[in-house]
Image (tube, rainbow, N blue to C red; front, side, top):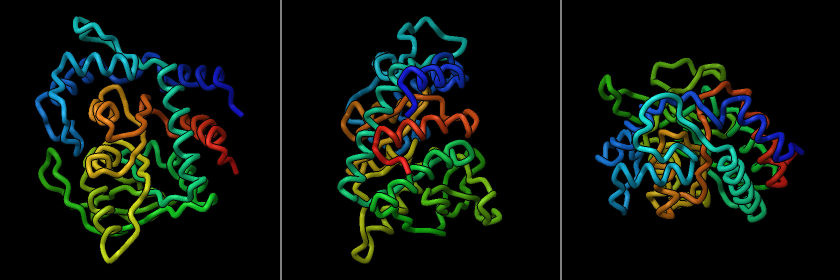
Length: 271
């Protein structure tokens, strides 16, 4: 079992927490865009509160540990590793309850090149514990707006984890999925799950549009979020997301392996 001290040390050494690669300028821009209700930052969430920039900065300081000083406008942003550890504990506790109750689970990511291994390990452990891991709408077309216009993608599952791939992608395990923050993939998966008397998930696990999109539709969600992802933390504050884990979501994929071991052990799901 990875100790809390060892986990904390790893978070700092791998720059998953502490001073992270996310520029402060990017975080502050994200808060301004969210406050303006830019859909690229709301991630499918329709916030109940007003959430101006100053209020968002206070929230992110509380939930992530970023500097609360509005005059701090440049340099690296910071995530408090103690916030990360506490949220990982809550994340693991919720996974453990899902496994004990054998609830259907939907898992999806907008960061497949970095986070697929983390989520696939969770999917395998939950499946072994008796949870149905849903793969609804596999292969379905999802048109996602990008800065280059509307782009055609397909919803795809690898190791029980949903992602999107460009429509012309080579369909092999080694073909990376597309980076997206869109809520459209989770909406497609949930619509397909609901159709024809299908099974809806009792829990959605993921990031970005996967958790915000599910939470907005009233389905419990837990997931990971970076310091420039205010929507996930707003959704948590408003009760639409149960757990938001603050960490850098774009480091090397192998750096998430100790987190996987920690979460599975805490959830009593180690195989």
